[in-house]
Length: 390
Image (tube, one colour):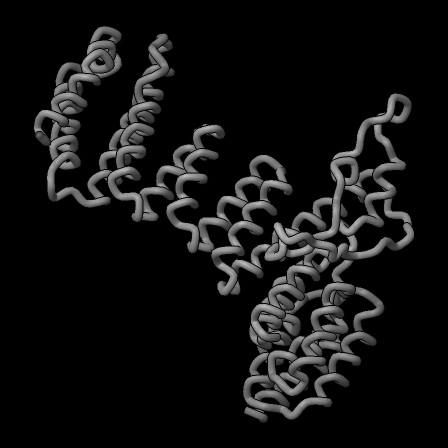
């Protein structure tokens, strides 16, 4: 039975090999080698002892063969049927994932191939099939969401992946953190667009979050509403850009930080105000130095940390770093803000964990070439004090 299936699949590739020979893309010896290699792979993947790596190697071989074929066709400047290599690889990967639906490595190989060759419709279906079979794999949901945002700038679809993924991966902390990170990246991109258009003007505040939900979405995070006009304003006939619509964008929840805060609150409710998670989320947001709503989000996180776990070392380091969040060392405000950080440090008992965290934070800062010499002296002195406390 296995031999018959192998022969059937091999016979389907005969027209392709004949074309290669007729147009002299490969020599007769190379074609014999290709036929033999395919025969070996087909007998192996159709046999009883087949393992996922057999399919993976088969697909890899066909990918390499297709790359070589394209190079030779380009060098020889000839026209060939465009259907062979790509369809063959897809066929192998499809058979592989059907034979071993539980092997995540094969799904990733399938996804990467479709993504590399911009097979967007096929990729969407592969994501759907993979997530249906692996709903508790948070990394797969994150991958799908990032793909939608990075490749297609489709934030609505990206959010949908995270929202659905959290129904299955609610207890996986990095899923929440990555959701928040995606929203912060989105805010940063919107802010950059406003800067390019010179629209950084103050606007009135709007309510942050609409907590109204219905029974159908009771397990979903209540996110503020962002309309298509907010994100992609229509073009005016006279000025080219509808600046009024873009002005309104600053007052929407998309730039106010309401969505990252809503995600944080929902996660903290689920994890019973876990200090370690709060610190991880804080560190993620802290990286976005130029995000316009950074201070608002950071303050919101630290306020909840202090209210729920004021004596915890994770809360302490976040409270210490809070004043300088988003403030560059070259800013005239930095010395004063850093002084507030040191004042906050004195409010806590100096445990080993807190001392290590302070050292990890200040050491890279002390090496900055833009740092004022007087500030460097203070920072180095603080580091030494922390080292003595260990």
